[in-house]
Image (cartoon, rainbow, N blue to C red; front, side, top):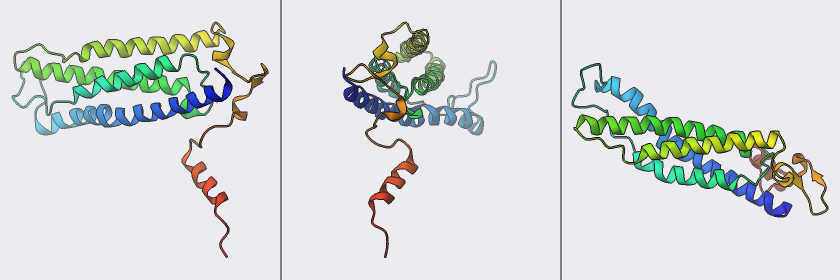
Length: 197
């Protein structure tokens, strides 16, 4: 894979990571906060030996964990041959952060969904328990890739940006597709706009 194509794949990885973050906020963080706040407020908090009929406060969106996990699998496996040494928004540590946050909220949502089913006398995790194991495995893969890269046990093209001549290109000299910071968009727009008279 040549350098421009590798940089283009990193840009697509950044877009996918942004989408994964938005999905985590909507289907992971907000339902988790809603359950944590809603259960004591509505009085549907389960105490020892006392489970009210209104427990849980609402059924969490467990079905959203399936496309989220599929996206994370694609991002993790697709990022293995990429150096990801560019901007902060598209580094492997950002992917690891999203994986850990998604794992924790998926685990909580799976427990809440199973508790609601158990209250009705059924044992049902809706398959989300399997997704928790898959997400945990993705965390292990990402950490292993980071460690192997630090110990230089992966191919050189997986660790560094190398052009067609075999020269190592520093990450700051790589021409990116578009700015990743909001203030860069405004700065570029101001440069293109003619000065006011």
